[in-house]
Image (cartoon, rainbow, N blue to C red; front, side, top):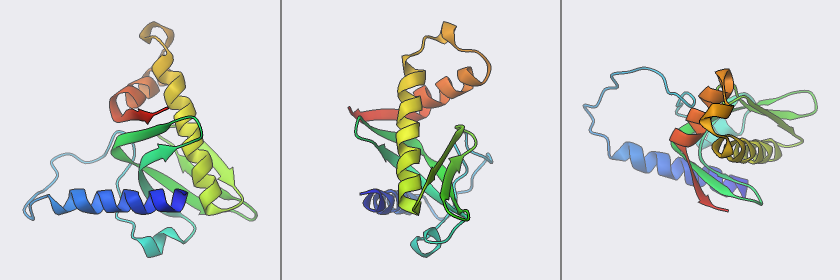
Length: 142
């Protein structure tokens, strides 16, 4: 299921990139959610690769992002690690796919948590995360 979603994310990315004119240049560097990298399918299979995702699923909801979220996947001695420092999500799994699945579940958990809070309830890093989740993510279904 997750592998299909990864392929779907790459297909969406390719489709979006094909609509840019060849003379297009970016005026600003950086991305508020994560850096965008061109990672092809062959690189995804290796430890330490960045995987851009647009769609996140769990048993309770499906969320999509307006900008790609870069998930860094590394292999440790016994576990795979999936992380995005900007969102403060760090997960593990026995396989690469299970680590990404755990990442998706955590992202959905935090999306639901931060979007349910009132602005008066958040300060500091929680304020930043609430802005990210409200501005860059949309619920597809619950």
